Structures are given as C-alpha cells and as structure tokens.
Length: 148
Image (cartoon, rainbow, N blue to C red; front, side, top):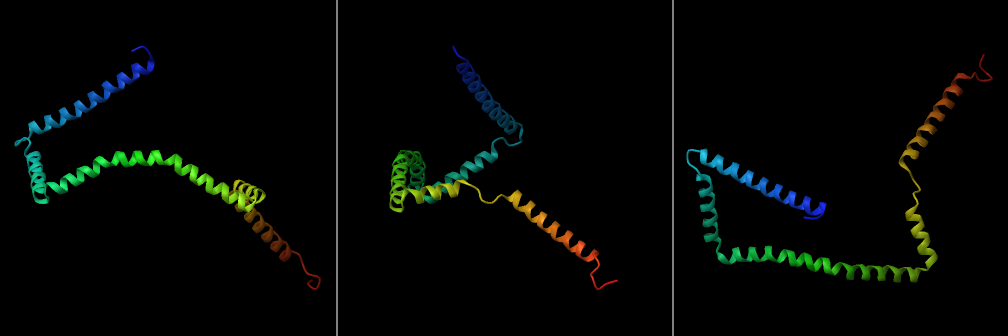
C-alpha cells in the first residue's frame, strides 16, 4: 500500500467483508434463538430438491447454461458496437452525400436550434390575453358617439 487509492481499496474491501459477515452472523444468531432452528431453511431446501426432481436435471442444466451464456452474449454485444457505429455512420454519410451537403447542414442547424421555448410561449400567450382584456375594458368604458 503505497498510494491513497490502494489504501482506500483495501479499507473498502475490508468494510464490505465485515458487513457481509455481520449480516450473516445476525441471521444465524436469529435462527439459533428460534425454538426449531433452521426449520424454514430445511423446508425451503426440500422444496427446491423436489422441484429439481420433478422438472428433471435436463431443465436445470438448460437454465444454468443460459445463465452461463449471459456474459458471453454481453461480450459479443460490446465487441459488435464499434462495427455497428461504423456501419451507421457510413449509411448516414452516404445519405447526406445523396441529398447534398447544404441540405444536410440545414437539417442539422434546424435540429440544433430551438424554435419554440415553453416559457416564452406561455408568457407570450398571457401577454396577448392581457392586451385583449385591456382593449375590451377600454372599449366598454369609452362612450360611443351616439351615447349621451
């Protein structure tokens, strides 16, 4: 342990080990205090064994195989990501060349600039409504030429 990272890694590792041991010890302590220790655990294990006998070893091994294949499927996905990126980039650039670069730049600019902002739209609508109300009140308050 020569660096701070080494020290913190070791301290965190010891902390996690102590936490797991403490939780396990607490559960075991509570089980020992019960009138019939580990009765529920024996019952659950018996149910699991009965299920395995009922379903058969082949189904169990198929499930284990699927679980073991998970990391390899994930690894395949991660390895294929750069190839998918290059393919998508080539398709997009090919589409841009067909449309013309000016059209593509216009599309990029239009998508990057916001034409509508909720705060301004709401305030603009409120302002217009207030102006209409004020005009309506002013129009009602002023006497018309024929009225006396």
